[in-house]
Length: 239
Image (cartoon, rainbow, N blue to C red; front, side, top):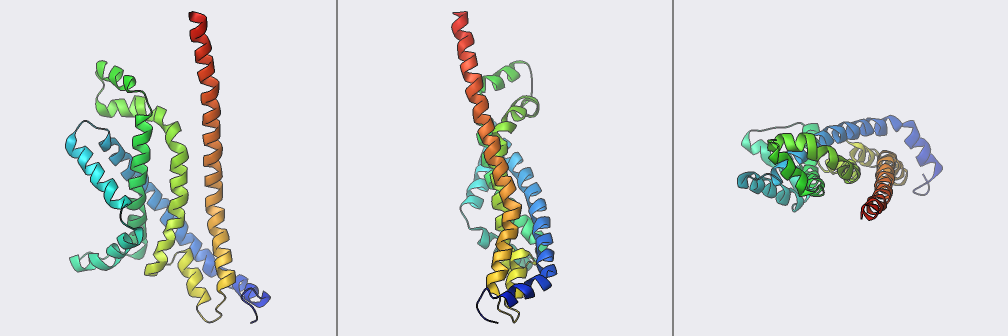
């Protein structure tokens, strides 16, 4: 067929593009479900880390440190290979959702914790003085304000999560990376076009999120620059 990027290889790829489309569908499904799990786990453990209860703080710390300091590949291999010995057999989609979701949930928990810490402690103290419970304080006062701080790093986590779904290729998970590799090794050995198209598809998913995160963060910085001088000017006028 000529070189690794010969025209015949490209024509063959586009004639079989449905294979890549199916893989992209699996990647999107796993990404959306894993992101939902990561947000749920991240918010819960992020709130645990800021609570006044020692056991909850310790539980949050154990979760974050374990998942951040062990490779995602090992975690997915554990779900795939070790759980059946305990009588638990999961389908590959569920393994991808649990593995990627719980892994990124640890990073989301740190993002949530940092967002909460960015809100002045006086607001929590004021809420306590008014009789608000911890949950009410977080739900009505702290988290609505912290959301603006949290959104850009959450978008970056979503980008990383989408890319990390490719780990499913190691356990024949049917995702985009697995389909591309299987197609290329199926006889044509057209790895060049397969990986170029796969990279472009991942780029199409990730670039808009990364771009939005940068622009949103820039708008937040501009807003802070506008608000701070205004407050300083008002304080000077009052004096």
